[in-house]
Image 1: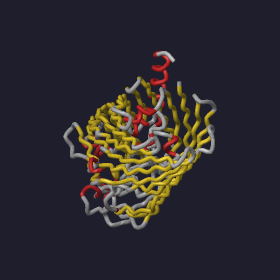
Image 2 (image 1 turned 90 degrees about the vertical axis):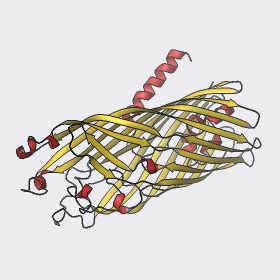
Image 3 (image 1 turned 120 degrees about the horizontal axis):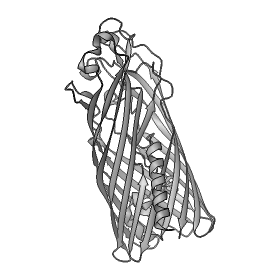
Image 4 (image 1 turned 180 degrees about the horizontal axis):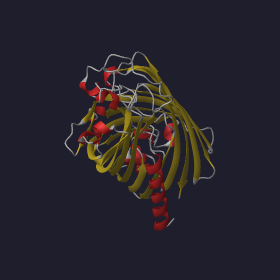
Length: 434
């Protein structure tokens, strides 16, 4: 494969990820679907398995264990989030009017691509993926429309990496992460209450869009006690983005159209994606059976608020989140009955970073979740392997409790109710060793 072909593949996947990425399935707005073989084990052993080129993302030190190869994958993420109203109130004390919003989950295709080149004790690689993303969308007339209608965060990450095998047991690797984010947020505006004429019956519409580039890094260590047992640790840094874009308002009443608060304007917002640390183990009992496990810490305290600043000097739009640090725990097993077939299973418990019902937001109705994963792989030849995986995420029912006594929500309304949800993920991957 020549350089022009490789470049064409990378550009094509770049564009596909940029268009498609979204629908967070990990806690917060994380997307950890970076390996279909790993997905079949619920990403247990992610930093220690080092079974294919996807180790560029999970632990770049693992590149020293694998031959030169390409891995390309597609993940279909199908979330379901439904809201049940339980006494939501307007700032006047009246009930908020509107329907329940329908299914706010948005199905998305999330592809990724990895390439690793082995050069004796050195290995180089690159990954193109989407580590973060978000997509929710409610009916325009739902009861919480002043809080959120559509929320869409797209992220693409370009991750060139290098690794070195220090000796037979120890490898080290690292990489640069060049990230791009693009966001769109929409919600209704209760102009009827602002002009004190027709509360909840003269709605306008606000659409905020922006994008930015940022950079970070990742580092990994891999230690092999024996050929059958190894442990790994991997750290990914936070990335700070300064998004710049526009705010556009529509259906603004004539009495307010002249005010700067509701004129189209340039905006700015800061977003810092979290840093994380994973520690994993992998052990083969024999050529047929292996087990693996992982603990991952994610520093979601980087997302303490969503603040939009307007160039015309009007007051900032603020949603306080106060997210916290969380852990994800996973265990998995792999069965390889013969040279061609591999079967995988795994489970994980993923903590949500939301600290309380009061700080939950309709844009990201996050809650703790349990993963159940299954996967299989078939080797057509020594060079070509196909992997598939299916995961179901059981998401705990959770409350949202907003109050009009909070200045942030005085005009948005006291949204109160229960969210129920789940996520299905279907993934396929092709590995080509050459």
